[in-house]
Length: 117
Picture 1 (cartoon, rainbow, N blue to C red):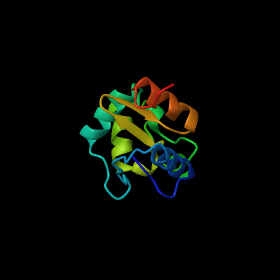
Picture 2: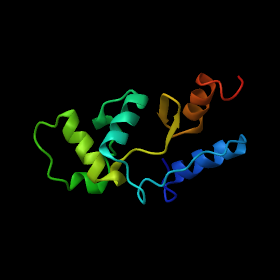
Picture 3: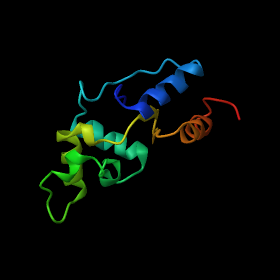
């Protein structure tokens, strides 16, 4: 999941390409994820929906949120406001990572045996 306006997203894509990967890129702001896709990716990320949200973003701070947010509410928020999604997300089979830095992305690639140690 890629946002070309995001420096960390561009860096992750550049890193993957420098290793010879040709990742399938989804511009999730132009081609938003469905609720089902979000739930599937959350399962691969192994995180709660609330932890996939950019809470420091000004747009998030302006939202009228329920006092008690449940997982389904956070998923709905991700569905309706994809720009609040932490990115980039790299997915390989049943595993995924929010690849905010090259070290965590490299660990992910090693864990999935996509690169040698």
